[in-house]
Image 1 (cartoon, rainbow, N blue to C red):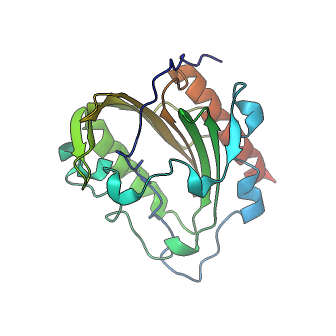
Image 2 (cartoon, rainbow, N blue to C red):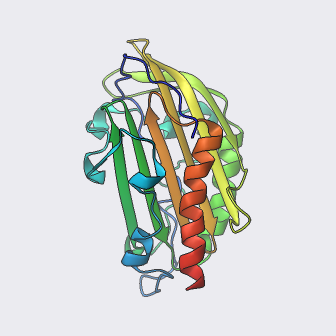
Length: 231
């Protein structure tokens, strides 16, 4: 695995809510049944065995640890003005879609989060396409939280799939500086879809994985998802 050295300075990140880009996608009916069960979704997540030494599992709800009101949202970037990642993709039935999540922390400097969701119908397909197009249009950006903190940086995205089983994938790498401190910020996240099932991985902090190593994490999760779907 190729993971960058984090150094001694921590990038404090009360500045960016990772866009739950596809969390609002789901079936058109609350009566619809999702493809996978909660237990199956938990089995496809990234594990400690997939990560370098030094990581520990932490409750997913505590990852990051900051109040959302003090964190800027990528939704506010001017280049994403036409697509509100938090609401425009909200579809009926999403609340009933089962989701599993796991988070891992290294020295309070880097957090890895893995998630999986099974949606009731194929509305997620169109949402994936729309989200990919919006992110591809975004490069230089600036976002600011209610308390005045924020991020100025560059966003690069691509659709390289981790494996042949993947129907669609979105990979995003964000680098920049926290305002007003000037501390560095590194965030990488990816979403992969197989059928109506979606897995995601994010790395937030310093010393995160290289592009190749991040794809290894995506591949670990997508391979497990493909196996579970095959039964």
